[in-house]
Length: 227
Image (cartoon, rainbow, N blue to C red; front, side, top):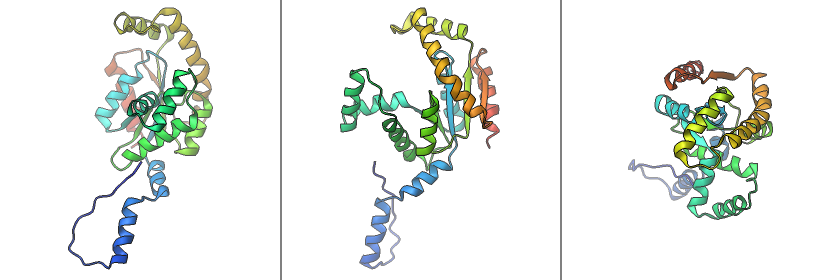
């Protein structure tokens, strides 16, 4: 990904050698500087089961706080749609039903974050990490999270919400048997993740049984405490 800083005409005469240096500096940003920007950013992991309402809460956070909402699924789909070489490789992997390598996912997340690092108030990493290793590798490659928002709705509530969605979504996986399997997989993978970050004291459990606005009040309290 290329970055080019804008420059203005200040009418100062500069020797050619100096111009060459300035242009090179503008075209090629310092990778360490870019990485440092991310390390100083607020990074929020948003974890919640299917039907927990985390997507809705992310939308409200973006509107209220100016954070950048990033979903690995959205990034993968966008890359495939772009027709890039990497997109074609990803498409082939997904068509075989194989998992996209974690390094590739993290590269895409980092690129998307660097692109917004100068303007974003923070980053919401939606549905991530789904297992302990994903969290560990994210921290090695990008940086540590400031907070983990655990959008916690009861399994019965999530089943009801997904069945309701299934009435209009047409999604084959919105049926009770499949939903319960998905929830079982989610809990099994997520519990160790929550436990790891609870040990650091950065998990904020959000009770997501109430209305969207009631849930967002809890979310706002957690985010306001970061300021």
